Amino acid sequence: MNETYEDYLNIIGYTEERFVKDVVNSHKVKHENKEIKLKKSHIHGIGCFTTKFYSKDSLIGKVLNNNYKTELGRYVNHSSEPNVYFKDDKFFALKDIEKNTELLVNYITNLKTLTKQMESNLITQRENKIETKELRFGPNTEDHDFQFKVKHATKFISASATKAALY
Image (cartoon, rainbow, N blue to C red; front, side):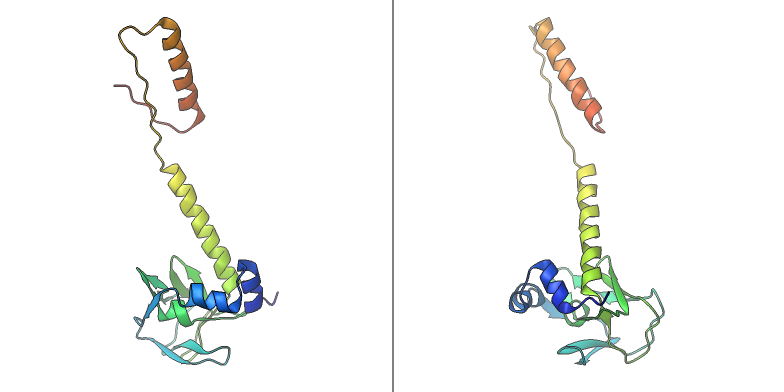
């Protein structure tokens, strides 16, 4: 399937103007990869070009670094025939990339990867979530109240992967 930049904009619900304002220009850009040069792209505007050979699956560089984008995060252009892929906020060579080649990513595949990473992060956050329930028993707790609280505490503990502690 020949996925275009316009397809990507339609999927995310952006116009070109809004995408440039909200995404492209959303962070400061810091040039941190000395093996990448910015040049005029035959695809669009400015692109990132290699100054050395990259073998398949080798790290090319970071896309984001704290509160700024790197040149890779800002100037790698879209292509339905990419030569890099995105993983863990970094670009890696999808195949061998020769010196002086423009780096290209499929924005739609990249979006799918980001979505999977975000879903994975949410699952991890849910798994690490601690929920605390406190049961109070006074010296004059009636038997009925005691049984009611124990029943609900047992239901809570068995309904999730909960660690119980009695104090």
